[in-house]
Length: 414
Ligand SMILES: Nc1nc2c(c(=O)[nH]1)N[C@H]1C(S)=C(S)[C@@H](COP(=O)(O)OP(=O)(O)OC[C@H]3O[C@@H](n4cnc5c(N)ncnc54)[C@H](O)[C@@H]3O)O[C@H]1N2
Ligand code: MOO
Ligand SMILES: [Mg+2]
Image (tube, rainbow, N blue to C red; front, side, top):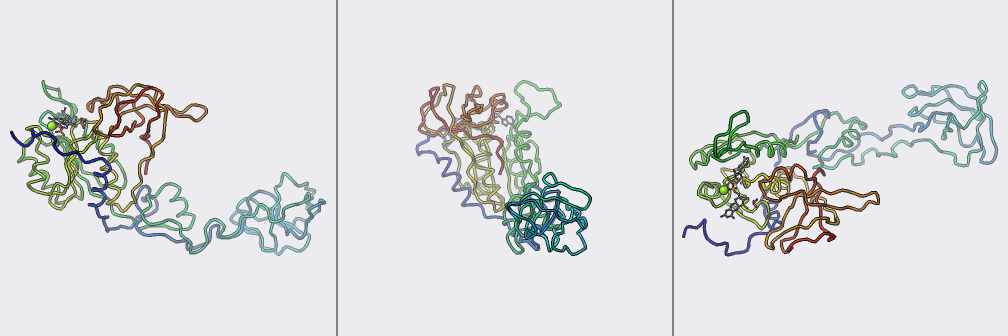
C-alpha cells in the first residue's frame, strides 16, 4: 500500500496547534522604509512616534462666542462686559484684555492669555460693544487646554500599529510628515492544476476557470503586502519545482492553492518535503484539511487546498495570522460572537468546522445566524451569500435550531 493511501492513524493537528506552530515559526521582518503620511494608510508603523508638540498646541475656543476672565463674571447675576476686539481661528487677538472686557472669539481661535472662559454667542445679548453675559456657574468652560489631547513627549502611536485613518489624522495633527513603516511583505501566489483555465477562454470538458486566483488575490489585496500573481502551474512536479524555486528567490512567502492532498496529481507536500521542510501537513479543520506549511528555499510556504472554501478558511484562520506575525503585528484572535442558530446544522465529530452563515441583528441587539446553504468546500455560491463563519468545535455532532453557536463575522479587519 502506498503511503498516500494510508489510513490516518494519528490524530490530526488541531487548528489551534497549527496556528501556534505557524506563529512560533515566523520571525518578524526587520526591514523598514520611510513613507510620507499620504502613502502610510494601512502600513505597519515600524517605530513608536512621540508627540513633538502639545495637542492642541495652544489654548483655544470650543465654541463661537465671547472670551473673558472668569473673575469678571458672576455665578448668580448677569454681567455686562465690553467687547474690545476679535480672535479668529488663525488670527489671534493682539491686544491686552483689561478687567471687565471680553473679545469676540470663534471656534479654534487662541484664547487670549488674560481670558479663561468662553460663553456661546446664543447665550449673550449684544448691544454695540456691550455684551451681557448671563450668570456663569462654571468659569473656565468652552476652552480647550493646550496638551489636553496629547502632551508634548507622550506617545502618539505605538510601533507595529497598522495605520488607520484615525492614526493618520492624529499624526498629521502633531505635524508628523513621514513615518518609518515595515517594508511590504513580498508574497507570490500560484494556482496549481491541469484543469484550470484563465478567464476569456472557452472551457473544454474537464476544465474549470481558475477562481482561486481571484479569491486569493482579493484576500491578499492589502497595502502591507507586495503581491505577485505567479499564474497557473500544471500538476507537473518538474514545472512546480522550477517555478516555485524561481519565485522563492525574490519572495518572503509563497502560497499555492491545489495539489495539497493525497491524490496522485497532488505534488505539493512531496515537493516541500524533498526541496524544503514540512513543518506540518493536514489538520483537523473543515474545510482546509490538507494545508501544508513549511519552508522552501528560504521562503515561508503555505500550500493551501484547492477547494475555494478551503482557501478562504485556511487563509483567514492561519495564513493571515502568519503574515501579520511576519509584519510584527501581535496576534489578534478573530472576533467571535454568540448567536442563536436558526438552522439545523449537520456535522460529524473530528474536525473543527467553519460553516458559512448569514448572521443578523434584531432591533433588541440579539444575534441570530442561519446556514448560508450547502457546505461543500467547492460551493462558492454559499460563500458568496455568507457574511460569517459559524465556528463549530471538533467534538460537535450537529446543531439544533435554537442552540447558541459562535459566529465569526467576515468584515472585521485587523
Ligand atoms: N482520499 C482523500 N481525498 C481527499 C482528501 C483526503 O483527505 N483524502 N481531502 C479532501 C479535501 S478535505 C480537500 S480540501 C481536497 C484538497 O485537494 P487538493 O489541495 O489536492 O486540491 P486539488 O485536488 O488540486 O483540487 C481540489 C478541488 O479544488 C479545485 N480547484 C483547484 N484549484 C482551483 C482553482 N485555482 N480555482 C478553482 N478551483 C480549483 C479542483 O478542481 C478540485 O475540484 O482534497 C480532498 N480529497
Ligand atoms: O478540507 Mo476540504 O477543504 O474539507 O474540502
Ligand atoms: Mg487533490
